[in-house]
Amino acid sequence: MVSECCCVCFHLQTIGPKEGWQVYSSAQDADGRCICTVVAPEQSLCSRDAKSRQLRQLLEKVQNMSQSIEVLNLRTQRDFQYVIKMENQMKGLRTKFRQVEDDRKSIMAKNFQELKDKMDELKPLIPVLEQYKMDAALISQFKEEIRNLSVVLTGIQEEIGAYDYDELYQRVLRLDTRLRSCMGKLTCGKLMKITGPVTIKTSGTRFGAWMTDPLATTRNNRVWYMDSYTNSKIVREYKTIDDFVSGVVSQTYSLPFKWEGTNHIVYNGSLYYNKYQSNIIVKYNFETGTVLAQRALEFAGFHNMYPYTWGGYSDIDVMADELGMWAVYATNQNAGNVVISQIDPDTLQVLKTWNTEYSKRNAGESFMICGTLYITNSHLSGAKVYYAYSTKTSSYEYIDIPFHNQYFHISMLDYNAKERALYAWNNGHQVIFNVTLFHVIKTEDDS
Image (cartoon, rainbow, N blue to C red):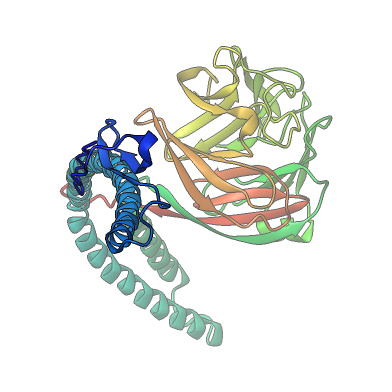
């Protein structure tokens, strides 16, 4: 028999297996083709022959080669599959890299545009800063005049009658007018920071309200005090903040109706509050001791239907700022979310209304500054001003302005535009927070 192999070929005399010949080492590739086949005599035949030994050694080498080739073939197949897999992954990575590159260009363009927009926003601040420099010089001049007046007053104390008091008083009035004119250049601003609080007094129950009139004259700095959030009609009046601290009551008023909540205000000599178990706002005048007006807020929830997070029948919040008087509440029609209404202080008629998407029950407290409603996210420790809704643009933004809730439970928070401060009732403590606003100064060239 003659056999031909792809590795090593042997041409032997044709001898059938029955005559003592047998097949050695047959291996096939994946397609079934012969890798190496050798037909040789059995080892018992011609075992002493030198050629037989050489042939046997050669067969062993061929067997080793055949096994090595088989192992190499298996490894090659495995590596080939791995290469295919890696090729597919590389294709995917190329696609992702192209996508990242496109996204990077898009993001860079977007960031560049945002920076450009910021720069455009900052350009109008250049004349504002220049005006600040001028005003700073003017204020320095005011300080110098005040120091001069202080020296004069000291001299008067030492030598009564040496100066004309009326003339001196007129100088003080003129200086006060000039200072107010300077302050009048400060238009409405955006809330930037809350500092404090300053504790004025510790009194009353855990819940209550206290306030001053933002429209009162400088000589009239009366304080009003309303303890508890319900089941009361008594309002205490103090002539000055010092009397309030000392507990010297100047007058006590008994209202015709009980109030609900703690969100009352005194505005231009009248008290505005939520009538007990109703959505009615009452206007009570201190001078006449009568109710000048009362009107229901249409659809407004009341009596703990939509209170602030602390409860206390705080459904309806009456407040005032630089632009007038407001009511903040919630309705079923607005899914329990905060509603802002601007109110006519004389008739209590709703002038305009804005519907927000902020849940009233998730609001800790709120206050208005320059037509923007600011909402805190809690009445407890860790509270911060979290949400701002501008009635000017009918838009909102989420913000993060922390403030120190010193006594851990705020049940009243109201802005006083004249003092640029927040009045708060903090767990039986009457405190004041100072606010920092970002102002735009009106120059004489502004219309």
